[in-house]
Length: 373
Ligand SMILES: Nc1nc2c(ncn2[C@@H]2O[C@H](COP(=O)(O)OP(=O)(O)OP(=O)(O)O)[C@@H](O)[C@H]2O)c(=O)[nH]1
Ligand SMILES: [Mg+2]
Image (cartoon, rainbow, N blue to C red; front, side, top):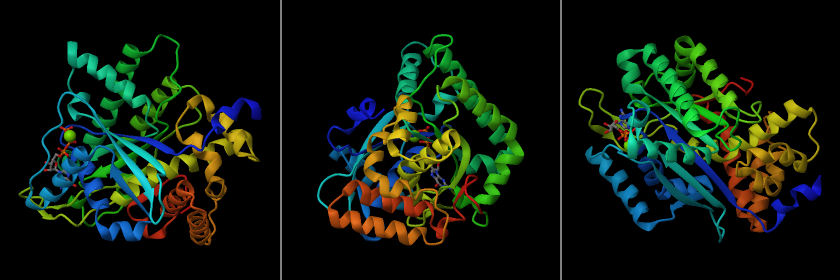
């Protein structure tokens, strides 16, 4: 068994996670991308968080940062048209040289989900679908402004439309009976523009989704289960997140406070630490007691999600992942500090991100049905 995975151990891999962000046109995806980046450039964030991100392409970084700064004047990014954009960010551990790896953020044109495209754009859709296959984690944005107006029916239609489009793409993309192995296995439902619901928490959001679309969600799970190989390794709609890129005026649509964001600090933990946590849960479900990381790698090898390559190097974090004891945060802090001392950027970052997932202070913003309450 060990021989078969030795290829994975040549050289020390760094993190490489791909995040796909979906939502209809106008649901706030591109604004979220620039807020995510701009806000993480702020000194206040860098000191507090233990890690930092930088755009690999300098001009893209400048564009995102400028777009973040312009938000304070209510100048917002234009609609994303025609093609999807993949933005690469390098991740660094604070206080350490060298790279911990990268996050690739895939921003899709929202109209992709609502309009039938032909010829060139039809082909682009297929290319976009290919890019989707590289992703590890997907965020589905439920547009708070639409929810306000159209209530639960909007959530229903959104999830149904999404499932139908996946089915159509599947037909265009794969042959009968074939299955896709690399495919996002963790799908998180997000309430974007959550600033429009200042009195609500993530439990309210979960209840809205459940009341309006529990059956649609289970159909989506079913369809994704039919598309992917290793279909027991998936987590669709088990995690919920509130997001807001800034505080907007609900009447005028102007930005009231560009520093008031919700949930942005959970995106990195969900993109990087949550899949590791799920890998542990899935392997326990499949095998009972899990005794070695090599065995876990074996199990998930065909899914070829990128995180598996660095799993053996974050073992100290991995084994703590489903620890629910109160002392978990301290244990992760100890792992982070020890990794920083050793100069191990990968484990430093992963330990810092894993700690955010278990942090009580996020409980009104992030909810996972897999966690004990
Ligand atoms: N209240 C509120 N409004 C927001 C927020 N983020 C974006 N908006 C509003 O939503 C509009 C559309 O946002 P975009 O980020 O362009 O939406 P998109 O999902 O990228 O749309 P496409 O590119 O067409 O797919 C913005 O111009 C803002 O008016 C938010 O956090 N809160
Ligand atoms: Mg856009």
